[in-house]
Length: 90
Image (cartoon, rainbow, N blue to C red):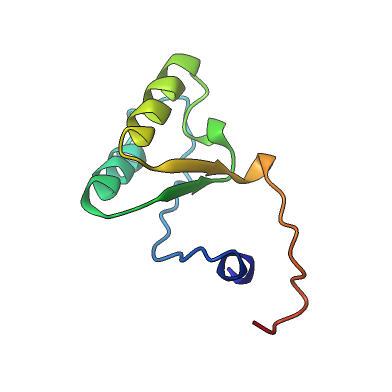
C-alpha cells in the first residue's frame, strides 16, 4: 500500500476472490459487479486478468462491462513498481 500512496492512489476497499474458476457466473463476480455499480471507482486491480475467467469470450465481455463503467483494470502480473519502497519519507 505504500507504493500506491506514493503514486497518489487511494485504496478504500479490497475484495478478495479466492474461488478462481473458469466461469464468470460465480458469486464473487456478481458481488464485484454489484459493488462497482454502487461506488465511485476509477480502477480495479487484479493479480492476473485470467483470474476473472479463462474463457476468452467471457473475459472480453467482463472487461468491456467494467470499462463501460469508466473503470480501468490494472493487472499486477504485467506491471512493475519502480518506487524506492525502503524509504518511508513522504
